[in-house]
Length: 323
Image (cartoon, rainbow, N blue to C red; front, top):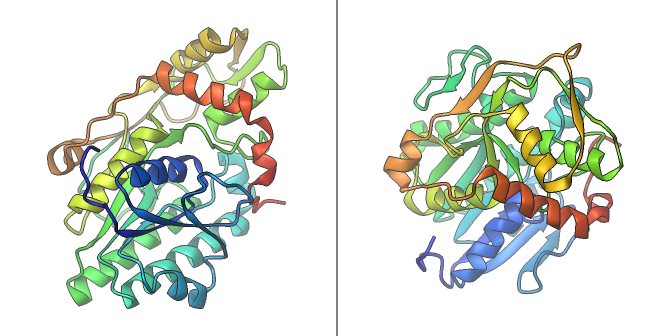
């Protein structure tokens, strides 16, 4: 984004030490923003920001940190693999609900000028393949963890219905990867998990399924661009998908990783491949926000691998809700 909309604005970024958050912070600083990060990670991403170590499950804390803020990027959340999010339901679900509810309510009470809330692909129903914007809330979300994200969306919807509030925006994100991701192989998402196993020397790299399943993989810098566009332009009281616009077969993902890392691999067809297709429609993002993803899969994976190779131990400094 090449404008100065956020110049000299006080912007709060929750989860600003995460893979999306650090990209958002970078872009805000380039625009001259006065950035405050709230995080439970023992990580510093830029000396120019005001870093607050604090817990968003505390409503009073949320009121305090939003009291003098113009804009809020609410990115804080709990990333986990499908297996971990299913087996550790409470550890994943409860803090997410509490963080979202308290931060959104605090921002509402303090009348911030604008807020963007990051929801996820998991808020969509399980029976959808091409995930169209404008779908209503009658169907349950994709999985149990999706309820926590969906509840944040409904809280914003409630503010809109009762108070006419439309300066709280919602974006739904797909599988986001990039520098600063969680590379703990016990609970990492697919790209970070594969990279961690490659780095650990797994040969051949064993990949679940037959590789035909197609997914929407979004590089974190493109996610950050879409999020800030949504915060600036608004999402009209609705949600907007921020995705890559392309469904990548798992086989292509692994082949591209092999080009970058020179690893051998094999597919384990005795394991499930998952749903054949999950792709976010990004029509609204293009038309409402003028959003255009820029990074190719290879460019994003290369940048992520290079960062991970130089910062392999950072995951140990991150807040882990599952230990």
